[in-house]
Amino acid sequence: MDKYVVRGGKPLFGDITISGAKNAVVAIIPAAILAEGVCRIENVPLVSDVLTELEILRELGVRADVVAPGVVEIDASRLHTHRAVSELNQKFRASYYLLGAFLSKFGKAEVSMPGGCNFGGARPIDQHIKGFEALGAEVFVEDGIIKAYTPNGKQGAHVYFDGVTVGGTVNVMLAAVLTPGLTVLENAAREPHIVDLANFLNYMGAEIMGAGTDIIRIKGVSKLHGCTYSIIPDQIEAGTFLAAAAAAGGSVTVRNVTPKHLEATLKALQDAGALITEGDDYVTLSRAGRILPTNIKASPYPGFPTDMQPQLAAVLTLADGVSVITDDVWDTRFKYAEHLERMGAQISVQPRQAVITGVSSLQGAEMSACDLRAGAAMVIAALAARGESVITNIHYVERGYENIIQKLRQVGADIELVSE
Image (cartoon, rainbow, N blue to C red; front, side):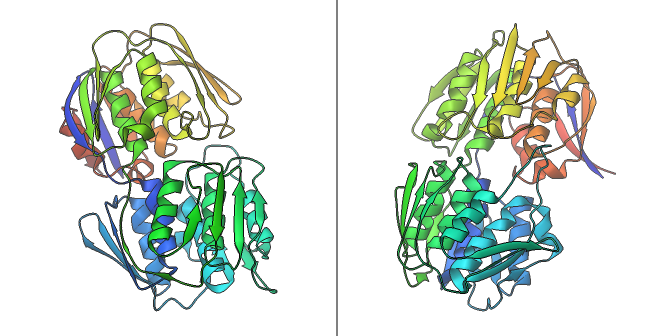
């Protein structure tokens, strides 16, 4: 069993280069199977979710190779199946993007129910299904497999999402791109990785307009071609390292970033007492004084990202006062609280909300990552704490952070990976 051993209490100083966005690439890889030709995808973070997704494609007959560091080539010319039902599909949530891709390519799809992080609340795909049905699909679940067929063909349609859904927006975009006619998505997600997916598809010959707004228009095309494309920087990875510097103190510069994508995160860190300097492709965070209490509400982009609220919670455990974090995106995403409490944090969890009473210091403890971002929050708290912390279940963290040990060590963190 692998674990992280962290000896905290040291401020962080230096530069970290940010990898490509994990949330973008796990949508772009399924999109690549729609091309008639080879897609070369650059700035790919080789985290476990991405490697699992590539292995799923290989099982289906797709050539999906890592040809250089951070570079993946995908050739789906030998893909002749609409079924992806292996155990690998159940390992992470983004495997359900194959539903939209298969519907687009074959007019039918069978994909195992997805896995991934368990936040303790429901993660339904009803809005995905609503979109598929609007395009002409009949969808049902049988023996843990989501099955979708278009017995009367596909046709562009108007889809209004009942709530903002990143996964639903991605999946219906994929399903619509090779569907005849015009598809309009209203109340669509606006996240940067939605824009990145649309840009990638347009590079392949798609006709998608409005990505980044709440109305996306997709004019179906008859075919797509291969292309070369570079993934945007990962704003959640960047935010995580900035939060680590805010908690532990010091000064850290994250490079290869798009500062605009970080606006809500930077505002929250500034409110917590950090000093922020922005450049064209970098952000520097410094903190020497006390952490200030602040209130944060996670909401769809451009609001504060739910994927950053556990990391900010770790920072605010050391604030000089009471902070409140509200998450309107997921029902219960506060399972990390009990682990931070082992370090001396004071957190009261209520439905959709955590009230954090700051303490003067944290003490090292043994913790177990319960999901990807919760694991990152535990690392941040451990870096700021006195003494030694041990974090197990680190496979969750490895799902979304590339070379996290190496990157933290280069800014002075005392952290190591220990195998037992």
